[in-house]
Amino acid sequence: MMPSRKRPVVVVTRRLPNAVETRMRELFDTRLNIEDRPMTAAELAEAVQSADVLVPTVTDQINASLLAQAGPNLRLIANFGNGVDHIDVQAALARGITVTNTPGVLTEDTADMTMALVLAVARRLAEGIRIIPEDEWAGWSPTWMLGRRITGKRLGIVGMGRIGQALARRAKAFGLSIHYHNRRRVALPIEEELEATYWDSLDQMLARMDIVSVNCPHTPATYHLLSARRLKLMRPDAIIVNTARGEIIDETALARMIEAGDLAGAGLDVFEHEPTVNPRLVKLARQGKIVLLPHMGSATEESRFDMGEKVIVNIRTFMDGHRPPDRVLPSML
Image (tube, rainbow, N blue to C red):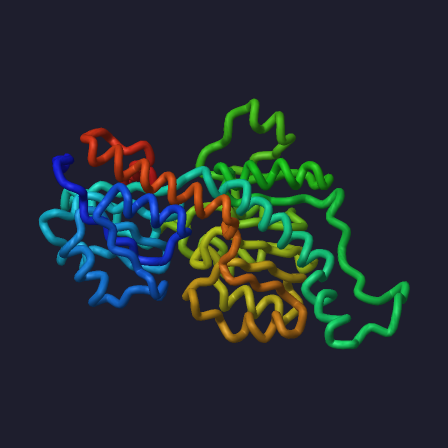
């Protein structure tokens, strides 16, 4: 561990809430990104060369090539966020650099947004929101803007971690039947509480669901987990929602199926090549066939503040010579 005799140089790659930045300035020799624009590769290289601690976000690619340029003082990457798929954790470990994240604090907010997307797609909320401002409403009609009832439908959750379980609790309250696929079956008391049905075969679950929600992390094993082949297993009246990572779904195949009417709709908060969004998805959104959000699943004031607090705790614990509470190891991914 690093000695704690001097204030560590902490480089923050994006703008954080004022209260978090102020506290970090009080505790550390903190270099802030006042402009709040993603750092270039050259700027990130300069950061890892000068920092004792790097505080990146999902917009930063901390790969092996960048870590090879790290200075001798870089010993901690305290990620501002839960997902660490943008960080080569194995390469960091090989260089003696500890990686931490901020788990737990965005669970409820992301589950809220996932449930909101389920409702938005099923009940055509995005289309309805545009009608009155664009002066297209001629009055109520028995057959106009008909969506789908969600009560009594089957929800298949891909990834039953913290967020998946929080979503299941919300969905159960809406009268949905809970199904899930996960690397490991969850504890029996959780299954019983949620009245959840476990599927060890993702293929079999997908073929039977009315709604599918993606809530697993992005790892090499989950890249295009919902491939063209798997998407074709879904029923044509089913909808899919993704608030996890865009790389988990084959976006091109998804767009093609919705265009052809082979899937009823989708709600996406994340995209495979953020911030670029597949033009076919944008066109479908303009047609009212899918709902697109700009990666705002965890975007609450409370969540961002709590994430910052976790980053600070991880840095202080590490600098005091102890193992930080949110250390990430390759075996965890």
